[in-house]
Image 1: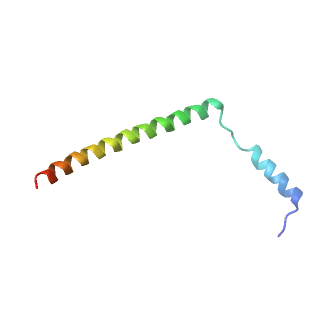
Image 2: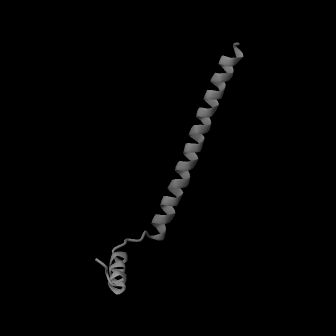
Image 3: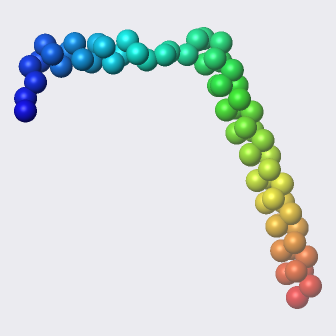
Length: 63
């Protein structure tokens, strides 16, 4: 079942009009939250890496 191009364009316009776009404040807030979470994750994995490194040096240093 083929649809005419005009009907398709009208349906697309109707669907796009239903989209709720975020405000500038919402975009800025979520962007800051993403950067904060990325920084916290980086710090966490750096600390885990240091703990593992310290443990391995202790174990391997005993030999």
